[in-house]
Amino acid sequence: MKYVVWIVSALLALAFLFTGGAKLLTSTADLAATAQGIPVILLRIAGTAEVLGALGLILPAATRILPILTPLAAAGLVVTMIGATITNLIIGAYPLAVQTVVLGLLAAFVAWARLTRQSVQPRSRSAAQDDTRTAH
Image (cartoon, rainbow, N blue to C red; front, side, top):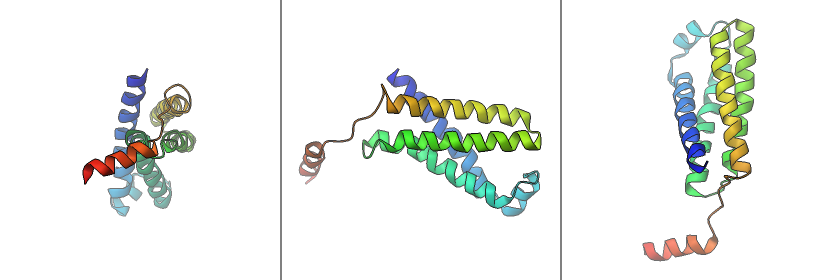
């Protein structure tokens, strides 16, 4: 189960980095042309949330520095995907709505796993101090 959570987290992080990064790096004119009436600022906000969520899925758990942020990031991505699903249904983008539902369910799985059985314990202070002692 431990490996499944890490694999799902990594794949989700890649997906959200890609989609969020595209929303942030695409020019305003190009984004507006494909936005189907959605305000560009809303897409930029969603892109920022997706990139930050992607980082939050991996970095806190991998470094064991504030690992509680990983399930919080996953839960934030669930909320983001709920909003994306509603938006996609309103504009009639049903295949995209299915995609956002799947991403939201996978993010919910990571949040659940990281809050229960597969939680990551924070670094102990003594281990962190040992790391700094050996580095010098």
